[in-house]
Length: 100
Image (cartoon, rainbow, N blue to C red; front, side, top):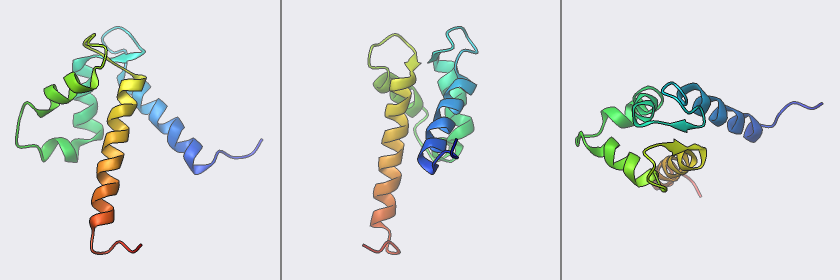
């Protein structure tokens, strides 16, 4: 069997990170609000610390929680990751050091 590709390793990492934080308060297939906050403060600490508005994480949770069940399933979690990746990519491509 061949070694996983870089993309396959990234997917495995996303699944592992989700599973690391999900289920501490019950359902191991979702992130509760507390688990989401722990994830954000641990895995995306630089983003969290740069926020001037203390309510930003609560609003993010509400916006990401598409079915309004108070939890984030893996799909909703991936919406967060995708949005963060797009923002980082946009910032990178606007950098004066980026070459097309």
